[in-house]
Length: 476
Image (cartoon, rainbow, N blue to C red; front, side, top):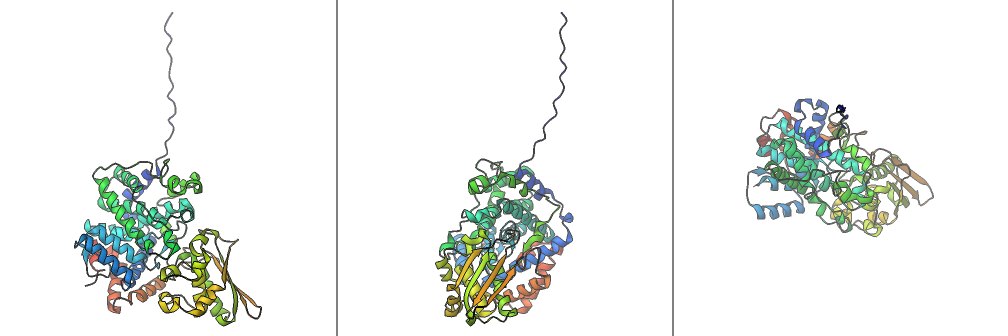
C-alpha cells in the first residue's frame, strides 16, 4: 500500500495584541518631534509657564524651605538647578524639589479625565534629565508633551476610582509617565522602556491619608514620581529587568490597586488614539489655588455675589451639589471640612471654599492665610453649608458644581457651573495664563525677572540647550 501523504494547510496566525507597556514604549520612544501639532506645543509652553509661576510663588512658603533644607542636607551640592532657588543639587533631587514647588500650593493644572496633575511630575523630570543629557529645548518640550499624553490616558483607565480607594494618581500614575519621558531623553530603546514601566510598579506611590488632617504628604507626590521615573529609566538602561505586564498583569497596576473598582474593558483607554487625539489639549489650568474638585462651586458662589448681589449676611443655608466621586475628598468628614486645620486642609474643603467665596467674593492665595482661616464669618458660612450628590454631573469629563443659597427672607438663589472654568472645553486663554503667571511670580521676583522667564519659556522650542533654559529658572 502506497504511503498516504497528508498535506498540511498552514493555520492562520492569530494576531497578538501588543502589551500596553509595549505600545506606550513605542509611542514615547519613537514619535517624531516635528509631528507634534503646533497647537499642542504652543499650549504646552503655556502650561510650563503656568507651572513655573506657581513654583516661584511656592518659594515664599515655609514648606518649600523645609524641603530644600532637608534635601540639601542629604545630598549636598550638584549640577541641577531648582526653580527660584539659589542652589544646585543632583538631578533627581532637583526633580523632587521642583515637583514640591509646582504642586505645593495646589494651583497646578489637571487633566480632568485622568484626574491627574501631570505637569507637576513630568515637567520636573524633563527639566532634570533634559539638562543632564544636553537635550535641546525642542527635545525637552517633546518629552514633556508625550509624558502628559501617557499620564492622561493611564489615569483615565481608572475613571476616578483611585481616589475612591485612597490612592493619589498624580504620584502613582505620574511615575509611569515620568519613566517614559526620562527614558526618551536618555535614548532608551523599546525593550528598555517596557522594562522601565515594569520597574515603576514597585516605585509609584501616593496615599490620600493627608486629607484627614491637612498633612503635607501630597506636596511631594509629583516630585517623588519624577524621582522614581528617573531612577527606573536609569536601571532599565543598564539592563535591570522589570515586569512586562505592568498594566494587564494579575498583580499589575490596576488589578492590584483598584481590585473590585477596576473594569478590564477600560484598559483600552490607555492607548486610545495615541498620536491622533492629543489629551494635552484637555488639560485644565486652575483659576483657583485649591483642589480642582471645588472650583465649580467656588465659581458658583462668586457668581451669586457678583451677578445676583448676594450679601453674605443674608445667607441662611447653603447647599453645594458635587459629583459623588469627589465626596470623600472635599466633603467628608464634614466636621473637619467645616474647620480646616490649616491652609492645605482648607484647599480640600467645600464648606470652607464656598464660605470664603461668599464672604469675600473671590478665592485666592489670600483666602488661605491665617486671617481668613480664622475669619468667624467665613466659618459661620461653612457651618451652614451642606452637600448633595449632583444627579446631573458629567464627572470626570467635567468637574461640575452648583451652589444653592436660601436667604433669611426665604428667597432661593442658585448658580450652576456645568463645565468647570479652565476645562479643555472651556479653557483659560493664553492671555489669562500669562496673567496668572505674573500674579504668582510677583510674590517672589521682580516684574522684569518675570518677563525674562516668560520670554525664555515661550521660546523653549527654539533653545539649543535645555540646560540654559533650566539654569535660567533658578535664582541668581
